[in-house]
Image (cartoon, rainbow over all chains, first blue to last red):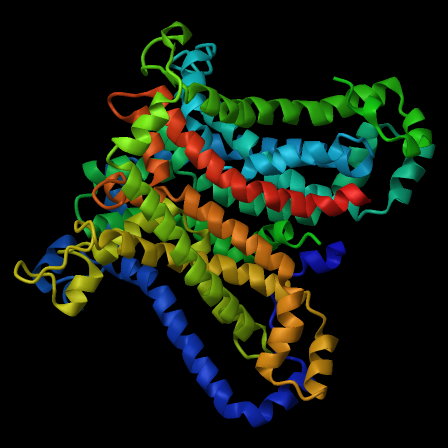
Length: 308
Length: 310
């Protein structure tokens, strides 16, 4: 499949005159379809809408009027309380420290592997790509037990880790994200790079461009749309990680925010109103992805699937 | 590491052009990521299998490992109480994911692929839960199903003390509450996959079928469905993988106990519980590994077979 078709994202085709003509006799079934889709959409939005509604109300009011009621005040009190009481900025910063380097390293390493396996014909290429892809498909829990033990035994200099070990260090979390996510990105990037004409590389080669220059100045600039899609997707996945951080980062105040929310829920967020507010605050970066980068996210997801 | 010395003969001409510098650079470009993935993913996977034959208490170095043969497996299959419920819940999870979100995702994708107004809006709404983390969906499960403060009981008048339905505390109910929310996310995920697949179905084929007098169902059955084969494989894989990986939602709710046991949780309990048992946890992990490889291996063979023939 060509890169243009794989990169195509879901797009409505309402402006197709032929389509509109054909739909005319089916108007009643169309109305039924819309009713069904509207109903489904309302159900789909209900959990988030309810969370937002609850977060806007003070606990005292929901106590008095009940959770399913309209009485009482509305405001952002729960949001500011969650933000300051539980020190959420600290946890957001932890997420940044982990997510940004992990994302950059994942894309860089995945692109170098993809370059080698897609632009050269070494016999080992397929094995190489299989090792990466299969690694990404394993359940995390299948490898966590020895990994946890390894992390406790591998020493790190004190400036990298307070514990002096891989365990409980930012570097440890970053590396497992990179090792685990490189597979998916390498798979997607290799498929994409394979569609770039070989003549480009050959011409560059004749001109004396080194392998590194071909990678950095010819292939990588052409991969920008895929890199953007993968960056969006990987940002969301790494930011949303709960498991690695829960096991490999056991000191509460060093955890990234998605994992930290679980400890905080017992300690600070004692009612559903505060939990809703905190959960929505934590969801903000992913909601930004949803509203602004949806196209990239979707094409990142489907690029991996559309090999064929 | 000399990766390219095994390169196929037919490309010898091209290979000879590689300068020494290029060889070093290419080795590093493939070697560094390979080393990272091998040491952080494949070595632990292998160690899971090796250590499953051992007894290794959480504290203590490598010298405290004792080799005990199949005893861990024997314990798991005979006297370890949470194993059967966990296996059963993983199986329920898989069956539900296979029977609900997968067909629902396909159905919604087919509807939205018709030339219909506001298709983009519907797509966005259904896709929304996919960006949320599963941990967050665990919290939303509590918002909705919590017995006293939850939406469902308050809406249906079951929040009082007398006729309260304890959705999260009752071990026969809680797995279903969790699954409803898991399906909420999974359906959008599957739908996105199928929508992408449907875009690649040649529209002229559908038109030709319509001209030949094929109805909607017949067109789907004979034109669209066969073209979706690669996507069906992907959906099957994500259904299995997501069911085996399920962890975050149940862990947020009650750390995966009392009706919410899963294989993934049992593995984790043996390392972050107060008494960590590395050997025993590895045996559980190996069971998980074997089940997942049974699905991953055929999938990989199928997607890479074409490459091998090139």
